[in-house]
Structures are given as C-alpha cells and as structure tokens.
Image (cartoon, rainbow, N blue to C red; front, side, top):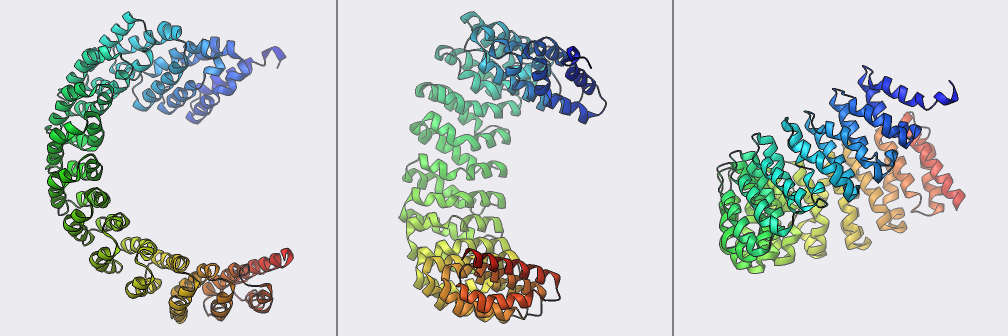
Length: 587
C-alpha cells in the first residue's frame, strides 16, 4: 500500500468491522476507537470518525454501551477541551435509545465531558442539547435529559437559567411515569446548583408535585429528594416544607414509599434537626417499627441504633425500646435478624442500668432464636455489650447461652462462636476461661464439619498467643496430643494441623520435646493422606527447630517417606527435603 494511503487503512478496517455481522468483531472495533483516533490524528478524528459514529445505527445494545463508554474519555483524541462539543452529537443519539443501561452510560459520559467544557461552550452547545432532549418526542430522550441539567445550569445566563428551571418543572409533570421518576431521582443534584432564592420557589413547587404523584415509584424517589433538599434549605424552611412531607410519606398507602422512609430516616433526621426529630419523627419512626409490612419493619429495625444516637437515652427508652421488645419476637425471621444485627449497638447509648434491665433479656431471647442468622448476628457483636455491662454480668447471663450455641446444630453458628472465643478469652481472663470454655475448644477439634475443625485449630493458636506458652503447655498440649490416636484419620489430620500452627507460638524447646516426636510417630500411619501431611508439617518445623534436630530427626524421617509407595507422599517428602537443603545452605 502506498505511504499516502496508510492513514486510511485503520478507518477502513474500522468501517468494515463495524458493519460486520459478527458482534464480537464490532465490539472489538469499538474498543479500539482510541487506537484508531491516534492513527488518524485529531483533525481527521473530528471530521471523519465522529460523524461516522454519529451515523452508525448499530442495533446491538452491547456495542452501543461500549461506544457510550469510549466517547466519555475521547476528549484528548479530538483536540482537547476546545473541541469537546464535537463529541456531543453521537452521545445525544445514544441518549434516545431504548435500552436503559446505554442511555445511563451516555448521560454519564456527557456529564464527564460537560464538567470539563468551557463556560461559553456549555452555553452554546451543551444547554441546547439538554433542551432538545428535554422536549424530545420519545420519552427516552426526556428521561436522559433529567440527568444533565445540573451540568448545564451553573454557567447559563439568567434568561437561560429561567428557561431550564421551567423545562425541568414540565418534566416533573410529564405524562410518562418514567420521565417523572427520572426527574424525581435527579432533583437533588439539580437543586444543588440552583440559587437559594429560586430553591424556595421553583424547586420546592416541583418537589411538591412529585410528592403528590399518583405513582408510588415516583413518590418513593421523592423520599431521597427530602434528604437532599433538607441539606440545602435553612433549618426553618426545612421544618416548614420537608418535615410535613416526611411525616405524610411515613403513612403513605404504598409500602414501598414507607420502606424508603424507613431506609432514609437517619439522613432525614439530620436534615430537620434534633427538635423536629423529637416532636415529629419519633412518632413516625414508631409507626414504621410497627408497620404491617415485614419489609418496612426490616428497614426500620436495621436503623434502630442509628436513630437512637440522635435521641437522648430517656427518649430512646421511653419510645423506641418498647418497639424493640415487640420486634424481638416478630413473626418474620428477617425482621428479627435485622434487629439482631444492630441491637448490640444500643447498649452504649442506653447505658449500663437500662442495658441490664431492658436489653439483656432481649439479647438472651434472640440468642435462643430458632433461626441461625438471628443467633449469629447477636454473637458477632457481643463485645459492644461487654464494654457497657462488664464481664462478670456478661458471663453470668450470656455464657450459658454461648455454651449452648457451641453445640448448635448449624455449623455456621458453631463457627461464629469459635471465632469469638479468643476475644471472649482475653476479656474473661485465664482462670474463668479454663473453668468454662477450655473443654469446648478441645471438643471442636473432633467436629464433623471440616471448617469447624480448621477454625478450632486456629483458635488454639490464638489462645496460646493470648495466654502464653506456659499456659498452652499445661492446658492445650496434653489434651491435643491425647487425640492423636483417634481411629478416624480426618481427626488425626486436624491434630497435625494444630501442631503446625502451635509450634511457632510455643518455640523450639517445647516443639522438640513434645510436638516433634508425635509428628514423627505419625509418619508410620497407614493412611497416605496423614503421611504426606506429616511431610508438610515437618517442612514447616524446619525453620523453628535447630539444625542438629533437622539432621538427626527430621531428615531421616523424610528420606523414609520419600521412598513410600504412594506418589503424593513421595512428592511432599521431596519438597520438604529441598527445604531442609535450603536451610543448610543459608545456614
């Protein structure tokens, strides 16, 4: 091909591939747009590539999505900020397609480009694009336009600003619910760019239209607008305009709207302030906690601790705690689970006396719940209660329940208890731990579920780190080594794992005296899985014990295993011998 024709080659390939029937080729071509643009240069990209993309009416959403994404980062290839407007036409076309994810990506790319454009270009190119989309015949273009007003508005002259506010008001009253939904969800972003004087008039009238919409899908998006607008308005305006809306929404006939209020209530309280929260929002929240729809109660229960942080302890005890008691025996397990995941956080808010009198019985009832998720959520947050009521009371009231859960039929509950044991041990102290929980830790080593046995071995290591090698030598090692003769090889394997975890904590002397002889004896086991695990454990012990022990004890055992009839045993023994040689060389 002649040298002068070379720049034509990439675009020729692109055009061919973009028209190819194979979607993968079309996709690859779109993803290589930046490469092609670099080959063409800025001017030809503006004059040839972008118009071509604008005319390209591919009907595959995946290709269109890729194009919308690529164009968002295409500004350097068309000549920078001064030529950003060149990218607007193809993205405008993509804003009108039927597929939502393509439109969303096109809007995102337009916002990214608009945020970098010069003010004069925003007025001359971007604002007219927004107006065209907002007055488009198809609802898709009107939906897309709602996400662009906050970019076009700040740099517009006063007359254009008034026009944009008026158009947005029309979108809030559009015949199509999808357009009103988009207007509701973007109102907060648009309102943040509008001047305070127009915020109270124009924006609030749009907001009121949306809050009274006959479609619950529009009203529930307006709930998010309450929090966004509340942060922009002064407190007295917020109480006058936003608070009544929140109270009405909390009693809305659609459970979806009430669910959104329950979900957003903490942010709404922050917007209206503590006084209005105490007078108006506490009764609204109590209604939501007692809602007849389980989904609303779940959302409300999950926010109970955050809500109580805003209130005084007295108010929380008087109004919220009775509802919490009711929710702890709710007919829906999901409500109880949501409550269990946050209720422990109420202890520091209510203080010691109220926690002991009021919350402790609720914790105990949830710890005995028939559903494992509820029990799990309580167990995982016990330390928050311990900080408030102290370990003595915790051990008297909650420890029996913990011991019961240690033998729970659901293995995930047993696992959660094991993971909590080291924390409990550090809080209880060594004496109390030995009396109550020591036997449990050994019992888990012979659980039927591997994850429990594995966690139990790790637990012993963490306990040895907490209480020290002397305690471990007295309380853990004898009981662990007793179990080495268990007739089932899987349990013997757990003991091997426990030994490899404990050895680094206990040090060379105890390892050589107590642990190494047991590992060596297991090298004669009849099960190959045990023997190759012996090789792996011996390899892990090499850096811990002295070189003389490696040569006198470990190496002969590994040489014997390297001649085993089983291929896996020979392989791991060979690996361990290599580790021995490396230690010798480095030594």
